[in-house]
Image (tube, rainbow over all chains, first blue to last red; front, side, top):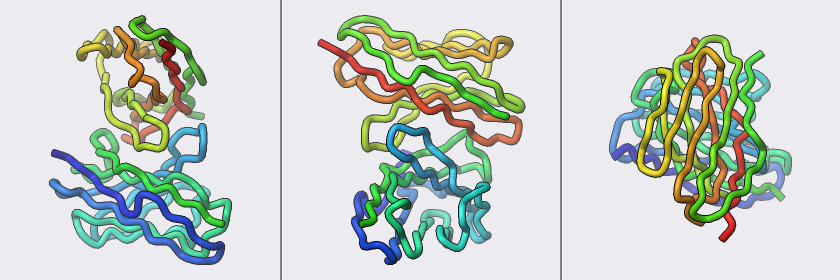
Length: 117
Length: 109
């Protein structure tokens, strides 16, 4: 149990386009979902926390207008990278928790590799 | 500020034992996690320590000393598939995870 999926696993896009990444909890209801970004050889960096039905909470330095997060249901959260640029190329990982806003029990998705040309 | 320190890279031999250390300075403490992350993949949970002492789980063990702000992950009978990055993460007083940069473990035959 506790499986989280992400789609797509890899995406290559042109600079200026928008990319949507989906995160789904397959066999449980995720009260909270977290979005991370990881650059090569660096640690995970939390971008935002989203609770179902409410606005996401963004970490300092993360542009909320550029990284749009929608948590429409207890099993689906989406991250849209708007007007993507090469510096947005990264590994994006979502995780899901059954406890509201708490990170002590989270299940990770397989990640999405974004390459912006 | 909050800080997690762990070695950048370690090398060990197949069949041997390796200990990966993690020291932390955080605002409060509600537990320490170890995750394994293979290249290009998401992290997978290994262990969670909230009380002092050693927790053993098969070939992997995790130790915590809260007074010293210190933890280690012990891997025994190393296998080639253990080559990965090992991430230490601490849950602070606000129940937010503070991540270390990870230790890349290279296993040689």
